[in-house]
Length: 403
Picture 1 (tube, helix red, strand yellow):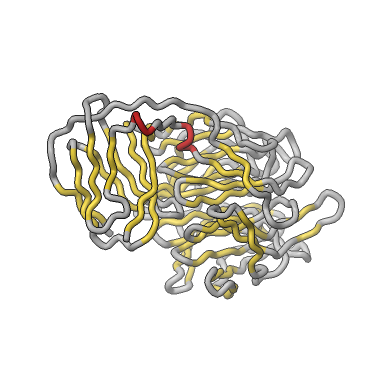
Picture 2 (cartoon, helix red, strand yellow):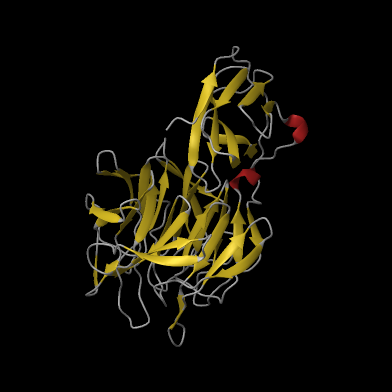
């Protein structure tokens, strides 16, 4: 759906701006509200994030059903209603609109599951939904494209592994099988979406993998892309923010050497670039969620379970001195029009992006004039985030309020 309209303006004049990279992109926040653990499930809804479930198994296997809400504006955790499916770990979680969906995983009896539950943050309640087709499983992955959730892979009942994938429509509360994932069967992979494509990579069968795949729902087609980083890994974390994908941490084999490295994926160039290491101790089973242009990550294990919690703000690697700013974005708050005004002729190939608070790209356009007017159409009132890029480098960012 077209949300904004670009009005013609003047000729390109450009701007000058020096961006200086720094490594201060991981900042520690308040510890996760629950007990230290791993194999948790995480998601965000609006401007809040959630982490729950998981287990510890150093001596005895202790499972959890609690869920906790994180508010970045107060840097505080609040306990919410326990998961409707009971004690669980290694489950999938994804968000569609104002609701989250959590399912699969291993229960306290050691059984794998195929159930799905919908979480309503306003009612603070869990409602059972249609079960996921195929075998019961744990260690599956999920991503969302255009309000459809996709779930697949994982370890299945009978000690086997799966490469089946299924699509969930929350409106009809129904599942449909899609094209089978063509890579090797696996568990503990990672997945995310960028725009109208889904991505899955790494994972393993006790030994990590490096392959990476793109799913196009328009053609029900999987395409292999560039391998992830330089090391095979499983039990990693993955997320997308500001139009880029990220995969990192994890380990190469069961209880092997744990990693702290992070890799950034550029979908337009199909390339991976090593970026700033995770800010905490190297580990596996780190989980993360996205709010706006920031990522929040925590929990996991390296043999010791963790409850530390970190904010990843890639835009902090841009040194934005106010006196150096030559792109003016106004008015803010926005009522009916947003104006982008440039001041000189240093940078070219500029683009402007708007993201919602969940980090989903909802609008993008090239900046080809010294003044670009973006007319508001049916964009809802609320908080959004913008970035301005030259080629693939973000050079300016900020928050927008639409009245």
